Image 1 (cartoon, rainbow, N blue to C red):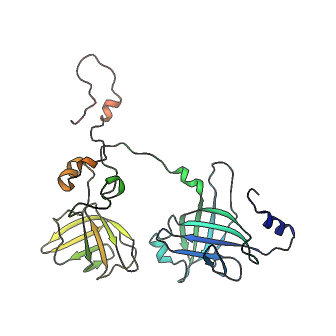
Image 2 (image 1 turned 90 degrees about the horizontal axis):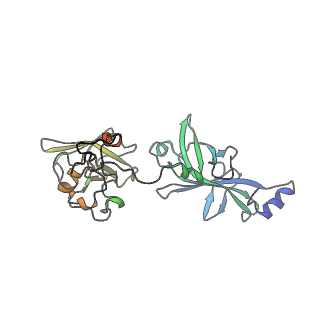
Image 3 (image 1 turned 120 degrees about the horizontal axis):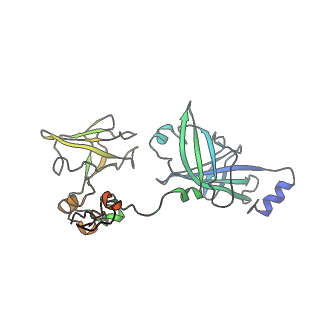
Length: 296
């Protein structure tokens, strides 16, 4: 096998091996887990790999060239390691996975057999099955920009040029007062901006067990002195009263809304003057203008 260490190859050739597998899972939120199919914990790469974790993997399918490597990891859900609520919250989506073949008698003798990320996860009956995708999976992701009339960046991200210093009124940090089904949130004293300002905005949890989870705001309406915000989908975790959240203003991604709301037309990233569809299939003609239908 290409890249297989000579010391491991010599060890395997003896016919009496002390080999096992070890898995490391690194989530995007900075939490890491280590597992091994050996009967005792192992330690290397600055991590401890737990034994008897109930995690196993099918045979790896690895190829040369640009074909996508893939396999599946199978395991048991547990309160200490991989919890069902964290899978539901998307904590493991896209997490980095590394798999080693290790000599448990001398962990310095090891081979990184697989490196990739977690894809689709299914769970049932106290167990889970996770698709593992190789590094070449990234080559399947479309690259480049989409040319369209609307602005493609999300308000406040790097492309919007305001990721560090958003305009005044673009967000508000509040404590949850009333919550229903993780989806509807109400404040008795209203909020700091006009009704409807948060539609299409972002609702982000800043603390507690659901820290880092977020949702898109569907409705933002005043009900007397109170203010109610409703999300398109519920936050899949505890966001009870007293939880600190951050509410971002919504953006319609249209030129007509960018300047009056945020005074940021110079960073508008859409193409509102693109010719319309009729122009793209038009044929030459002798009279009349064929300008492409620009709005300007």
